[in-house]
Amino acid sequence: MAAMLEPIIALAEDDLRRWRACVRRFWLQRHAAPEATYPETEPGVDRIVRGPAATALRASYPGLVTVPTPRTDDEWQQAIDLTERLLVDVRAQSEEGWGVAGACFASDEGVRVRVDLVTRGLQGFKVFRVRHATAGSEADVDAVALWLYVMARNTLRVQSAGLLLIDTSFVYPGLGCYAGLYREMDLAPVLGTRPVGEWIVAMRQCERGAMPALPLGAPCGGPGASGRCEHLAQCGLPPAEPALADARTSLDIVGRELAAELRAEGYADLRGVPLHRLTAARHRRAARAVKHGQPVLDPGAAAALRTLPGPRRWLRFETIGFAVPPWPGTQPYQGLPFQWSCDLETAEGSPRHSGFLAGADGDPRRAFAASLVDAMDEEGPILAYNAGFERNRIRELALRFGDLGPALLALLPRVVDLFALLRDHYYHPAMAGSWSLRSVFQAVAPEVRAHEFEAPYRGRLVHSPLQAYAASLERELPPEEAERLREALRAHGRRHCEALRRLTAVLEAA
Ligand code: SF4
Image 1: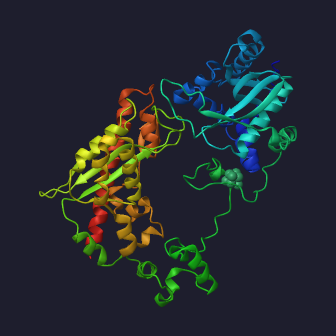
Image 2: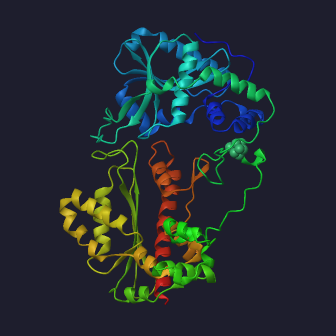
Image 3: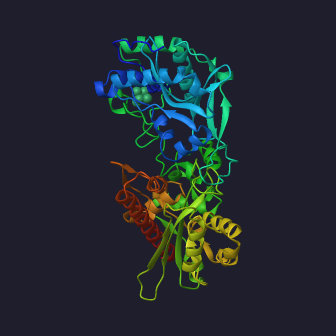
């Protein structure tokens, strides 16, 4: 079954992905330094053969065998040989839940693929791409079409091909029982639209030719954009056209609909719009701030804040939604609170910080709720930004834990939304029309750096609290590395509360 590899650099799924997105990107990758052109193993496969995803997959396929990740030509040949042995072992395949994760195949044109999951059907093999998502993408269909093409070149009979997607109605009963987490989606109706043989010929021709012209609408991505092209620097793109309007002065600050009207009236940006043309007070405030390049604050915010009795608290929640729910009674993507951070105003002046950060030992919601009730005491306003988020989590916890319900619900009338005060009384030109917490913190308290997050993880950096928390739960992670992630989360919580206090001080300054 295994084809001999040609002495040419193999094509892989990632090459197809690049070629389909931008032929120039494909060409640049194929002409990059040799180590960069080495066919990549698919990270998707690695994601499903370790961690909670592996546990979940094994619950559905208890007889799952994993082909180790190949990195060199020799390892690829070993992986292909192992796959062949596994696929001819008919006796093993008759056992319930048999499957091969990371099955490796090569075609005689030098295409190598690593298939997420191969199982046995009555009339042939069943092939699955495992996605920890609720829907697939065009790239998934391309990848499965490529797999089927290569498997067909190896004369393997495939009964069906599809995606394994997350079923959001699944409720995890515990004890590793993840059967039912995945739902199958058949790709048969769309696979015929993929002329894989023609694509492979075109890719080979492309790599032998000169660098292709710049394609129209290539998804280059900007710095930090997801899916950013790795050859942005080498591509030689012409300098970007100057933006029609700086985001800080854009008409869109007053909303797309009104901006369209203003454009139709001949205005290019907000600086040129006379204030009497704007009827909403918050639009006039934003326009004044943009014209003068300075924040504008109305006294109403300070007056509203003065009516609040002390002591004040500044509160922030973090929640996470796992594709594979880790705790009994939880569902995929359910928003689960894992951290709260709070600064309490004191008579001495410096605030007292407290917080809760869930560990790895089970559903943290009860401990989260109980510690929150303790820390919030019985009086004093609780200031949060976009406080509907905190209020809704409190309501959910009150519903779930009846004994804590009255104490939790008693917190709700005390919650004050700083967003509402900001929107009605303040505008800073640096917000560029965005009221997101990140934009607001960056505008009013950039030195606190609450809009940033960075934590070391397995020799690289993660840039979101959710990634850091999820990583800290990995069983295989050395304890000291998990603690570094947790310390980064605690520090982020402290910075967040400090930025909320700074925001309050800005509003009180009128
Ligand atoms: S930067 Fe854009 S045009 Fe250039 S190779 Fe990358 S995706 Fe293609």
